[in-house]
Length: 111
Image (cartoon, rainbow, N blue to C red; front, side):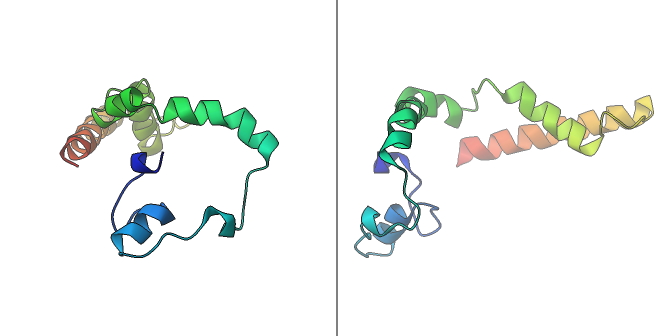
């Protein structure tokens, strides 16, 4: 599973970061916070489904099920639903959010 984690010096994953630094990765037994066997049994199947190569390939291509939720989040973060705004303000926020969303998608495809 380690090959599914980001590589390089800036990786959040200690194992890949150590490899990038030409160091021997530390043992998992030295981790401060460990999952109990009981918890591990419950979440392992979920983790394995989320780490599925086919699913990850769809995410890299920005073909996620949550694309609409993401753009809605960008819109409502800039223009809260609870606050009344003019139609013009809402249109500007939507235009800005679409641009931001598309720009982020383009950057993800290039990465």
